[in-house]
Every structure is written in structure tokens, then in C-alpha cells.
Image 1 (tube, rainbow, N blue to C red):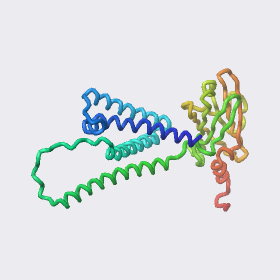
Image 2 (image 1 turned 30 degrees about the vertical axis):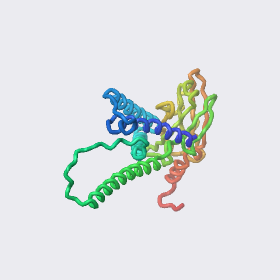
Image 3 (image 1 turned 60 degrees about the vertical axis):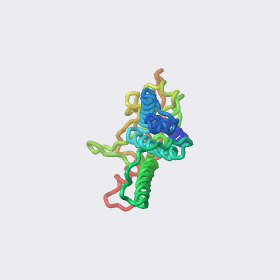
Image 4 (image 1 turned 90 degrees about the vertical axis):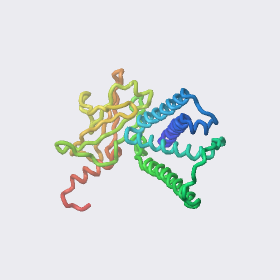
Amino acid sequence: MMGSVFTSGHLLMAGLTLPGMLALAAATDRHAEHLLGRFYSTRSRLLARAVGWLLLCIALATSVAVQGMGIGFTWWLTWLGAAALAWVFTFAHWARQPPTRDRPVRAAPRVSVDVASSGMVGQRAVAAGLLVATALVFGIGLVQVQTPPLERNDALHGTIGPWSFIFAEADRQPPERVAMDIPMKEFRLRFCDDCDPQIRQATLKVNRPRNARATGMGFMGQHWERRTEISLPNTLNAQSELWLTVTGKDGSVYQTFWRMDQVSPATVAWFEQQRRPYGSVQ
């Protein structure tokens, strides 16, 4: 599932950024003549420019919606650089090359042919090096992007009542201490697309809820990735249970639970470390 989502995301970004950059190129006199062998009218150039920016804006919105602001913006910039680099090399080998124009004869500069040629080669090499370096930097950044929690291999897939879901801790790190020295841990939850409209509320807590009014903290956020942060008791251990309670819009209530060592081994290890006598050796 993770691989298919990742691949479809790249295909979507390629399908938006490549034609977007091509439309922007076609909006200029130089590239319009290069691509089609003629000049566009002013109205046509404006239309091509509008289409190009629209496609790039859609690509940005899609990337941010899927990956979040930080990762999504980096992903978008990566594909902009890749699309621009692809068209630069494509234009150089385009079947229709612009005709050579007669230019007024200018006085030749007092530079030897060898020096002028080496200067042009050097400039082209620097430009090509900058393009390759930009694409390489963004490519490395993309590879280092962490997998979203609900798409990791350790995410829990299950069914509660008639609804299927995916559940995972937000990160594999130990809990974070907040005010009053309380350890907190964030979790993520996603229901299937058909299930989500039927759900009124989902809550989470450590240890079995005593009654229907104490089922824990509610999940908030967009339907494709609900999130909640809960406090963890000092008595937490590997056998402690993490209870998920889901209430349907029809009033039905369902519950399921996992052992904490299934959900967050790092959290269990952290609590065990906290309970060891100071200076003890494992």
C-alpha cells in the first residue's frame, strides 16, 4: 500500500509539473518559436501562462494536502527542478530547431577564438553543474523524508465493529514530558473512506475505560489522519492496555485494545528505564 501511494504521488506530480513548465515555456516568444515554429498571439501567450501557473499551483496544493506543509513544499520544489531540467535537455534535442537569424555584423572583440570558445564551454559547464547539483540536493532531501506514521510497516491494521482502520504512534521515540512532568504520547488513526462518514467520535486511553463518560482523549483533525495526544500513567508497562473506543452516528459503541509493547516498544522501554534505581546497570 505504501509503495503504491508513493508511486501514484510521483506520477501525479509528474503529470502536473511537466505540462505546467511546458506551458510556461510556450508562453515566451523564444520557446514558442522553438516548439511550434511560429509566434503566439498576446492572448495565446497569456492563456498558456495562466494554464502553466494553474497546473503548478494545483501541484503545490496536492503535494501539501498529501504530505503536509514542510514535506509537501519540498516535494513540490523537487519536482519543479526535475521538470525544468527535463525540458532543458529535451529542448536541446527538439526536432524543430529555431531558424538561424541574420544579425548585424559587429566588431569582433579582441579575444582569441580559443579563449572565447573556452569561456563559453566553461559557462555551459557551470550552468549544467548548477542544475545537476540542484536536482541532486532536492533528490537527497526527498529520499531522507520520513515515511508518514500510518504508512509505516509497524502501523496496526484492524477492524472495530463494521469499520476498518489503521493505527500507529506518531513517532517511534519515547514519550515527551510536558508541564507538571507528565509524559505524553501522540497517536494517529485513519478509517476507511466508506467508514469515516458513519463515525461520530473516536477516543483513546491507557487502561480499560470505567464507563462511557471516561473513554479518554478524542481524535481530532482531517478524516484521512486523525490524531490525539494522551497522558501516560507512571505505572505503564508492557502488559498495559491501550483502549480505542469508537462511537457511530447511530449510537453504537465498539472497543478494542492492544498491549503497549505492541503499539510503542520505545515507550515501554522508557518507563522501565525510569523505574530503575539510579546508577543501576542493565
